[in-house]
Length: 316
Image (cartoon, rainbow, N blue to C red; front, side):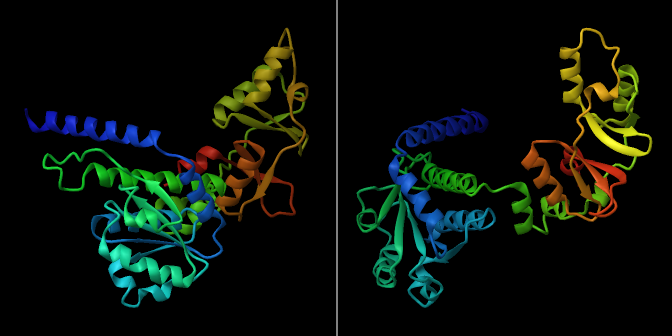
């Protein structure tokens, strides 16, 4: 068997184990999520070796998605790093065997501090599991390693269970892209969402008059590529027509000898050009819309541009 075929087999073996693991997720996972969500302090993730590396990833991902979290190496914890932990914290101890000395050695000091302990372990019957408040099992029957010695499937299972915690907590906190940007100002998404509306808005505003015929306003919308047009009565903007309005008009009217006033929505959402893209995204999310009219200042009504969800998503 060549290496590519062997690699495919390894994928299949690990996926099979992960599917079995998914069926064993129970109310203990729910309890762990609730404990972390309601924590008045922070989540402290502890591990050592390869599970320590995974624990560091879990803590980092949680911290960047709305959960206050840090990683503490279990070996360093008993040599002073426990000073970073307080009684209001929830501690997640990660150990596949559940019998790692460095992990077991921190349990008593954590209890003395008054911490709640969650165990993530591949051995639900281990000493670690028995001395924890909640146990999340990451047990797998076999490693992908042919010798059954090198952590392979077990580390994948632990990583995936950590991802499940992260996503469930994100959803419970209603964590949005604009929140993510605040924690990632140096990344691509951070640069994208912390930019200003004026940096991304389209100044070539689609506009029609209130008596513009259907065919002509469709041409205006098509030429400006925004799926909408503003509707004016002279120089005063009085409404908006979107793709959705067009579809509803086609369903409502037997013939299309109609004008803009017959299908426009008189109210529309605005934002000023100095606002952050995060603010624009929040408004779009709140009202389930994809475009905003842009004004010079919060107090002016003259429309100087349009910002769409695509302007934000496509910004590099």
